[in-house]
Image 1 (cartoon, one colour):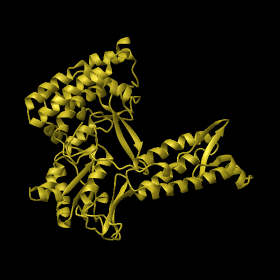
Image 2 (image 1 turned 30 degrees about the horizontal axis):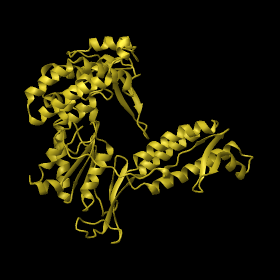
Image 3 (image 1 turned 180 degrees about the horizontal axis):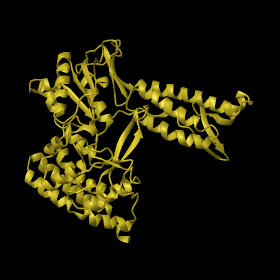
Image 4 (image 1 turned 120 degrees about the vertical axis):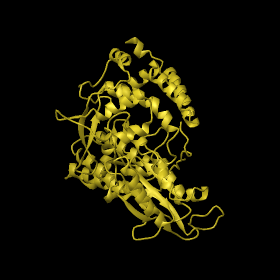
Length: 469
């Protein structure tokens, strides 16, 4: 017990990171023999095993979710025992099927929850495999990767179109996690036999849904520690397949951009015919791994012209607006372009945020004001911080006005016989800017509701090319 509590985690992380860095550099050189030797060393390392167990039992968001074994949490003594037990083999237990609702839809999404033992082994293999593939992944792949995120993907799109209007293929892959072909995935892995057998065992283990076992002939279970990495490996070389549409000169390849975030991606080029051909190429390429495009979410649009210019991606609306010379974007030589490229929160994102705020306020009709504020503040901060890299001041003002309206209705329903002046004094005060501030005052302490418009706009610096931490 004391051994687990007194573990020098920083020291173990440094040991593992040094090995991962050596794997990364060997993979960049194409030295497969060194990569395999270091991976074998890493999966047998007690430091890596301890970090994998700690990740799935203490750090991960779903650490308290049980698999088919019913185990939700482990004591320090059990954690040490798990460290001694985890080994690469060709066995795996079925995952537990859990259905979670999709936001804003009646449909439910299936999650496959492995046992804690399987999650720990998956975490160990991810530690060994991730640096090898980080050295190979394409530069414009941004999801489920260390040091990369949504704002990097939006930055890549902005860089591609901010100097010239272009055509965009905005596409989505149908049921990506559920339909990946197992044979194609294991062949693409191109790894050692023990690791390949272990991954095949997880893929073929099946699921337990309401007490009944069901086989899994395709797909990777959403909910597994290693599943996001396997999905990225399956979709690797998608960008290269599209790039083959143009001549292999630096100038021609720079005109064509492919940005992928998980199963959502965009293809950007100034020629509409190239974009149409890209859709055909992608559809054919996906067939090789058992996937297909989702027709209702696949469309071609222009960034500046047309009936509905621009497109939505990862919650942002990205489009170009015709403006005067004084407000226009400019070329590198200072020549006005006649348009300006803006990234804003999409109408869909604004609508979902309004619905969430309304649901929270409706569910707190009789709750104390402090409880309502403590529930709303994290939602407001999270949404505002996500969109602070965009042109969001107008959206922030709209959200604050909407929030004031529904909070006023909330207060009026609580005190139908009181005057508006009395209600305003009870629930609001005037801040330094002369604006109304929803606040709860108990004695000398005050709890204030956050405002969207108080969030400062910060420009995000995109990760460079294929750089990986």
